[in-house]
Amino acid sequence: MRQLITADQIETGVTRLAEQIRRDFSGQPLTVLGVLTGSIILMADLIRKLDMPLRVGLVQASSYRGQTTTAGDLKLNPDLLPDLRQRHVLLLDDIFDTGQTLTALVELVQRQQAASVRAAVLLWKEGRSQVTAEPDYHAFRIPDEFVVGYGLDYNDEYRHLPYIAVLEPADLGE
Ligand code: IMP
Ligand code: MG
Image 1: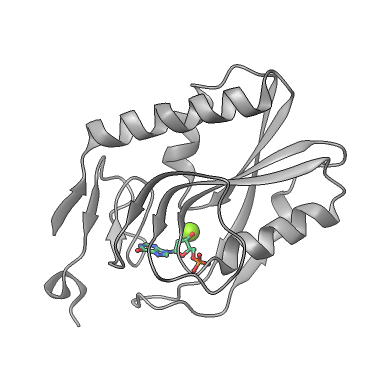
Image 2 (image 1 turned 135 degrees about the vertical axis):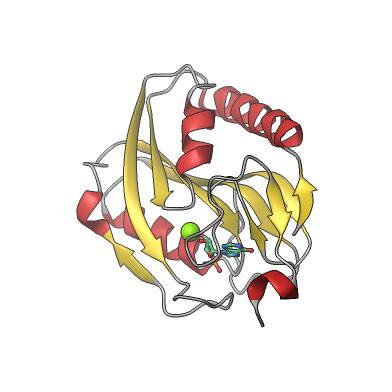
């Protein structure tokens, strides 16, 4: 495993993200809708840097199955969704890879009659997108490698690492 983004760099990146969001929403009430499970650490760090009236919600999405690093069928579970009618919504995910997850979630939020919806991610992988939409906010562009840590997992492990690391073939057992 090789460190790609240090804990200090993440802290700086999340602070920058929060500044952009504070500037754009300028005090308007906001619902931050975190995508389970990868967004949990970013959620905890980011919302403490925001100062508008704020609600937190969660939605579950999964596209990876078991011990694989390739995307499978996207599954959305809206059971946890709060009432989003007339709310400004900021979708929050760990990474924008093919873009399928955030694109589907933006549509889901729009169907809830939200006032507006934007998307923020910690990482945006280069050269992978399969959709036309792009995240409104991102902290880091990264090369097309499989990364873990700061919420991101491989087979549900490594989410607790305080930094972002690249998993190498030996780590993957491939
Ligand atoms: P997308 O729908 O292809 O954009 O994928 C987004 C989801 O795939 C994220 O929420 C992550 O859970 C997962 N994912 C994509 N790339 C990686 C990676 O490099 N490491 C860990 N999870 C990833
Ligand atoms: Mg995820």
